[in-house]
Amino acid sequence: MIQFFAPDIETTGQLPEGESQHCVKVLRHREGDTITVIDGRGTRLTCIITEAHPRRTRVEITSRESVPPFWPAPLTVAVAPTKHLDRMEWLVEKLTESGFDRFTPLLCRWSERKEIKPERLEKIAVSAMKQSLKATLPRIDGMTPLKRFIEETRSVPQRFIAHCEADKPRRLLAREYRPGVETIVLIGPEGDFSPEEIDMALDAGFVPVSLGDARLRTESAALAALQTFHVINQINS
Image (tube, rainbow, N blue to C red):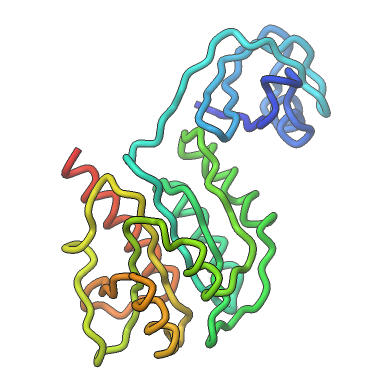
């Protein structure tokens, strides 16, 4: 199945320019063809093309389907971006394919990257959402100072910080995660969170966790944490 992304399809009745070009120029769809469109908010629509135009393909909606996520509660992955942006782009792609709700780039004391363009990451998330046959686009935040993120998420019932400080107690994430509960996991930069940042998160109620014995890169740790959530959710479904 090929999905087209049109967030305003219900009001405009047409595909955005980029999607129109792909539909008409690349896939060579014509008037009368049936296509599948998602709005990024959990709805998949079956449409018939009424005007095949490379910049504004118009459609008639014939049916709608609600596509709920297969995980039972919101999942947020907050990560200090790596120096090389392509690794963060890869991470957003894989997180979206796996399924999650929010990606927050964290600005930490030892962050290697101080700025990031959420628009670029959102484009990658859109592509991954379409390819993996999902209908909900994850939220992609701009760079957020760790302290501010911790303060803004105090009401989330399940919050973890994955760090590497051997002299600070940690618990295995797979043993601590409770399925079906809104969850956040913090993943630090390559140099880890500073001791002060770890203490700040712990004071705010974050649970210190380990992802296992293997030494993981930042992006690998984030993906491993998300997959842990999914496996436990599926076992308990």
